[in-house]
Length: 283
Image (tube, rainbow, N blue to C red):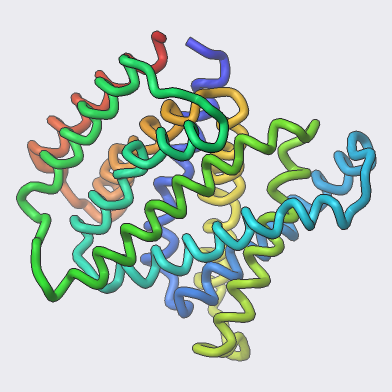
């Protein structure tokens, strides 16, 4: 087992907490995505400045030019996820976003010539079977949800592409040199777009401010940054499969915060997922 595996698990756990802060926030969705990213940039700026001075040999503009495309992909993923999740059922959105391991092998093959292994194929099948079991009672095939399902599908593909692009972060001596300009450009894109639908000029309660702060610290700095870093240390399909474990942590969090009791399907899906994780980490 890689010494970086506990860090990857921590990143998945941190990412899974995002639904709590999004649910508790009353801010408009695209503006919330913008605040989440821009506050993250503010918080990690000392780390970026330190490592820019310590490691980077090129210019600042080179860093930002390299971050334009990943930042755009991340911004559109955030926006389409919020829109799609609100246009379909929670079960549909959860299942669709968990299909990342289906698209990740194609990105890794065409972008880096990284072929999927036998263990990864079996592990992917088990993990997806678990997600189907989890969603079978609630998943709805309906024309009413078709548009939302398609938007979530686009968002899932973008998330897989965003993770695959993070493989390029290995060329930097510090992950902060990669994520800082990416988060900043994605945040500015979301903010500009949000201005067409909502205004930032309104009162914010201390609780609202706390939710935005936690959204930046936990699932963004502690979640997305670790997932980006993990793409340097693991095979892409491994990160894709283990990131599916967000549903386990989300279920545990929902139990303690919202008293939502897990179903039997949740335990079956969790068991299948843990077997799949065992397969990919032992290869």
